[in-house]
Image (cartoon, rainbow, N blue to C red; front, side, top):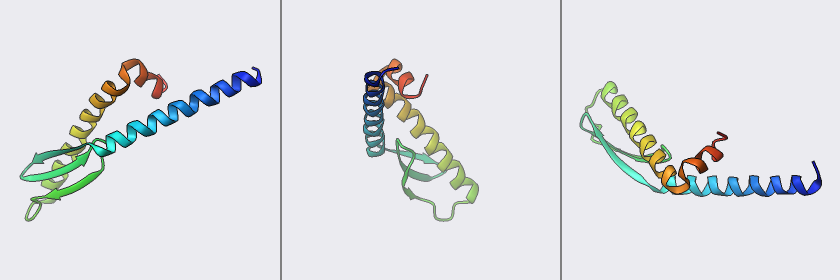
Length: 97
């Protein structure tokens, strides 16, 4: 493999990294509200919890269920968002598939 091929590979890696960082930024900026057991969780598509409300007097089990549901919903929303941003083939490339 020549020097030119290695430079091309580096350029391609940088392009993929930049694209992945941009997607991460977009996922982090999108927030959804998920309500479960009377607890409302605001969570980003990047699975960062922003706010929990209605937790007063709730059992640890109720809180755990609410957080788990919020993570699940944010993962589903993130997958749809990523598909719309890069398409299925682009997503395979980013994930090494």
